[in-house]
Amino acid sequence: MSNPYAAPPDVLSVNTVAELADALGRLRRWARPGPAADPPTLRVLADRTGIPLTTIANALSGRTLPGTRVVYEFARACGLPEDDLPLWTEARQRAADSRRARRRPPAAAVTAGLPAPVTDTAAVLTVIPATVAASYLATLAPYEAGQNLTAMTEAAAVDCLAVMPTHVVLDCLTAMVPAAAARLLQAEDLVLAADQLHLLPLPVGQAVLAALPTAVASRLLFEMPRTAALGLVSGMTTAWKTALMTDPALPTALAIEVLYSTDYTWAISVLTTIDAARAGKIIASVAPDAAAGLLTGLPTARGCDLLTRTDPDRAGLILAEADPHQGATLLATLSTTTATAILAVMPQAEAGELLAAMDSGRRRHLLANTEPRRASVLRAATPSPQPARTAGPGHRDPSSRAVLSATVARLFPDHRPPSADDIGGR
Image (cartoon, rainbow, N blue to C red; front, side, top):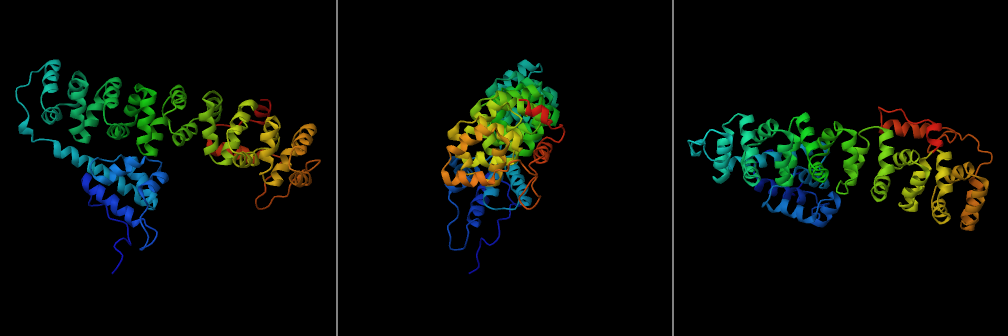
């Protein structure tokens, strides 16, 4: 018998929450490594995606509508090609629209003769069934519907938004003042609010985002597709981004993207001032060359503090990418225990470059506290005086800052990387 899971499931016909859950279950079975193998467990998928196991279980149950990010990360964790992932998020959006449409009653069911003034109308809309109120609001101009939603009790307004078609909700939120729209989004289901926020016109979405408390904003950004989140964040003020970066609820992966969204000077300022534990997670999570580009722009004491928060293997990879003179300054300032632990695992050529660039007294001290055989290898790898190294596979020019400058330029294309005097004097 042929393998029914030889190809991933087709989601073009998915239109309901139940159909989406069934497709996700079939996708999980398709993701098994072989016909005789078991599909990945929910715990494995939770580890791959970073999404809580209970959230994945709910998505597969068909009882709740999963968020866009949940569907996207689930599909990617199952091994789907990047080009196919939008098909799954579009299927999720169809399921969301279908759920709202089913709850909407015929227009004829709307109570007739509602009072004309907004406050009186809002009072009536607050006490009648949400489906009836939502249908009436859908017949109004967006500005008038937005006024009524603003005047209704928060719970009643949120119930109406939950059953209105997506395009009507977006029209109403767009017509409201940002603070009123932000108030309703805070009271809504997190996944639903994130969907609505990222679908708003960009200037409107950014105005609403600015009106939200930072902790709420960070959770909503995390729930939406990464490109949408970055699109919103990119146009926010530097002060707002700084406040966002200080929020402990902001996931590290998103914090890194926000860090790259402005310029090098601001990134260095943020890494200097935010909580050291958060800054250390960022340095531990970015590529080694990017970490080197950021660390060597920090005050030496701060750079050493963040290096100390990473394991020696990781710190060695970072220092191996740094300009030798800047890396040597960091290595020489670290405690003897930390510095020798890093030297013990660094590539010997790069370790030799750093040792050659530091003060001879500190170099002798570190080598004296290094395991004898390793110290002998490092002494042999330490050039004195430091010669130019022939370019070749895996080698870089230790006499220039070309690699570091190129890294900073890649991360922050609109900003001139600091000169040697800018950084070296720190």
